[in-house]
Image (cartoon, rainbow, N blue to C red; front, side, top):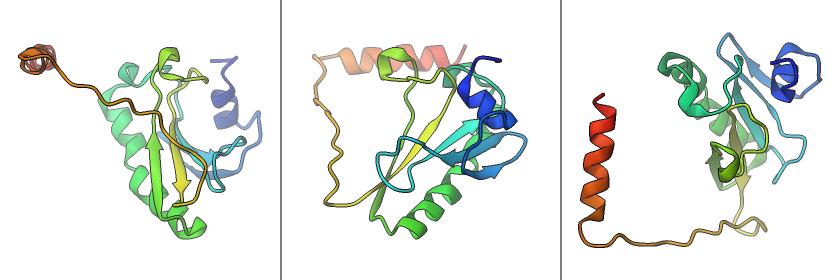
Length: 138
């Protein structure tokens, strides 16, 4: 897409601190990092959300994730990493191009999740699981 900032980064029209690039994937350091070493892993082709990607292209992208996490951990000395993928505006996806954040974490960092745990009414979990399995089998 001509107006997508990540597509412009992949094409080289916008410079980046490139970490890796192949036919399926491009990784670079985030210019607004939550921590030093905060990286982004994106597909080289434009897809707005993960569910739009063909499985083979998603596999080609995600095969880089373990090595990228290991490299970020080794270089930053962090004690943990959040791998975060926001899918859709309501999920706080700001750039409409699939991307995975690799965010180095330490015990004393200032970044925290709001994770309001809930529960299911009786029978609802089984009902949802059955519906999702049926959808997967289509």
